[in-house]
Length: 419
Ligand code: COA
Image (cartoon, rainbow, N blue to C red; front, side, top):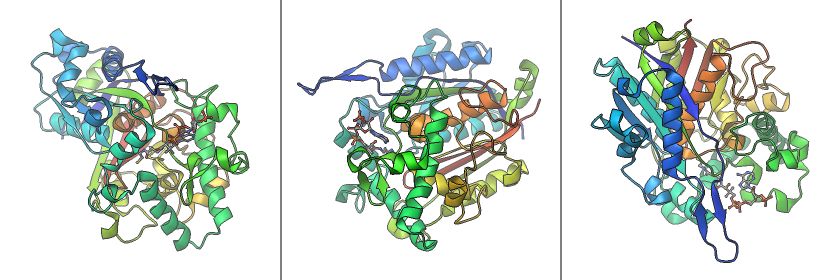
């Protein structure tokens, strides 16, 4: 198969780009979904060194732009970054909840591997903060099975609380013990996040101001500063509600090699789908479908967990950081919590997890997250890290694990620098 490689990448600042008038409740947009997309697309194309005319097709990953901003049909908007060069090119939006832009990446790869396209542009975006919290919670709940979950008041913190309870009970963990595991995972994200200049909770942000860099610091917060959101998940176990975009230029690998000094190849991909309703699943202590996606991607790439030198995983809630770490085989089942407590997966580890700060600190504009994972790893692999770097040297083999919905849509990619 021809194979596909990343040749250009760009991530916008992640954050909350609105001004809220506390008296009137009015929310003013200070960086629109259109501006975010334009910036990411132009940045990625410029980074690639390819001319916009050389891009054959465009995929946009976005979860619920209609609900969040009023704007659906986002595929065509991507043309506006280069209206003359992009007009009349194929462009479409792909939706897979929080894995929307990983679905866009996979579709771009399929387009290239099929031989139809030589190059593709992927952009992931979400503009979440125009809605109040209740609106955001409602929009996100659309990624659950509406009749028995979202429609009956179930929220995403609630759904992942089911996994947290399942994990705690399966491994017989005490409340404090488990809380420390989750807080250790979160504290690592906050430490990495302050080093990432693009992070929502970056330098000078809330986690920095409160110095939430250890499990103790998080656990010692007064109740009102770290309230229970969905037992046992607290505020600091939840990812951020963010605005942002990220884009990638992907090319057929032989073309990439002819044009670029270093090429980061998609060495293996995995895509699995779990049943939508959690009531239809067993084993609420592990990500069964994600593990299958990992097996597919590792098999295709011919790698094992020990070969990975950095990963970006879907820490939408701290418990999912543990579950993803186990799904990738970086921790044994039931051991990830202890591994995080012991200080593993920091930038000094053989395989750091979420050097970017992850969804907890970099932020989680849901449709942008999958593309963003790839952008940040690509930069790591070229030795030009955005933020924290792997202490043991530039990683040659890395992986993303991006999860959409309540662990339903699973995408795994193994990236390998081939030159
Ligand atoms: N983690 C840490 N702090 C957070 C936070 C989070 N996830 N969300 C908000 N805060 C902080 C804010 O900075 C603010 O701090 P301040 O008072 O010091 O300024 C404070 O909490 C209140 O912010 P607010 O925006 O009013 O919070 P909220 O109650 O509306 O939202 C959550 C909190 C947890 C409900 C929201 O962050 C959330 O829904 N997160 C999960 C998103 C999600 O499910 N994504 C999809 C995953 S699959």
